[in-house]
Length: 328
Image 1 (tube, rainbow, N blue to C red):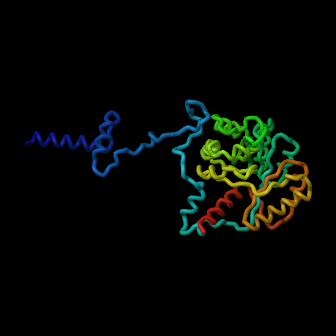
Image 2 (tube, one colour):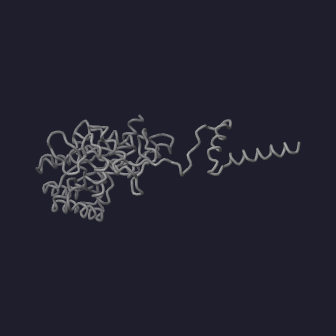
Image 3 (cartoon, one colour):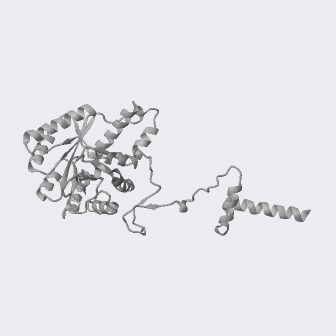
């Protein structure tokens, strides 16, 4: 009787040891026992060391310690983390995401920078809340982008993307259906030190192809960068795809210098202010033309009843506004 009791006690102790944490040599037995226990799932939870790390495409067959990683990329994460947390922290959408400052805001981005050295230098001399976007392939871009960041500007990479028709966006451009989109984007990003996000140079074809834009959104999510849509075409899918991956994104409202004349540029600036006062926020794109930079420098020295903010702040406010509209 005593022998049977001792054998039974030994068996119970063995089972308890397996349940509480078996050594690696018997891990298979421990999982088998766990599967048999009532109320337990038959798929054991992943330990910290077992969490799958999914490498981004475009960095070679074997991931390295420097390869950007994504932990289980979200497929239905519509909002960026900062907005999701604000939405869940209050009792109602309107109370939880009310902006701290409500005066109308405008953002102005000067892009195509880097090739025109004189124009880039004048753009850097503009007020610091003017966002500056640099062509990655320009030889002087790394130095100039660092100088712009040092002067307090928000810096973007003006990434070349495939256009409709024969227009060449420039070297290392992203093309629809290309297998190396992620690698090309990585090169473009690496050429612009200190960047906070990217916007498209050309891209009237690329931004309308949602599938091709997926690796762009994946990399931006992994690097915590935003996407500013230059809106070179009405059917752009870039903002929608960006939001699916939790990437903060919005589009421009005004082109300042489609027509290079003082009256036309001042008229676009007036439209920018009107749009901001009507909707709370508006974004404009301009280029380093002498006329644009001269008129803009004088215009920004005056009070127009709006606040100048970086593009990232304008995109944040646009996103909040869109959520409020959807919640009504």
